[in-house]
Image (tube, rainbow, N blue to C red; front, side, top):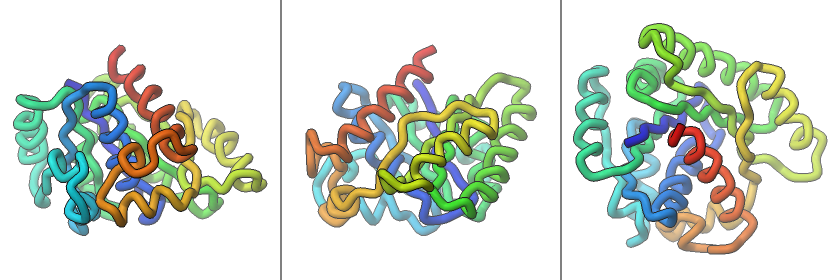
Length: 215
């Protein structure tokens, strides 16, 4: 089993969107997926409740607690899942840190605004702290360009800015209407708009994540 955590110090950078749609892509690969919604706002739970898509079958609400509690949730999911995806809240480092302590991979989304880079550095520091505590190469850490508006200077420069921070950058996710419409329907983008540019972006991201966690 692999554990993937989606984290960030800033809200509105697409953490829940990435977590939910990665789940959809992994399910399409034939993997059994569990999604732990550790954000007190429980956006993923609300998304899943909008419809009867695959998220309604795999999203589990996680209450705030200790690292042992997070580990227990992951171990429980391990009995049925090939991959566990944990969505964490912005601004609550203790929850994100608990998740990072059990993660194989931490994804750190970043929006195109230069102001998004400052909280990203804090999230990166937290992930590095978890790695140091574990005395391990895990969690692996990757950046994900998120909500990128194509053909803009900010969009073009984002990947370069992230690479300068010293971690590898995975395929990015654009700012697309289909993503929001899928959430309103309670569906992943793969269910709502298969073959669309938005779905292809999430597909490429999922393939990159799968390659990392299978090492």
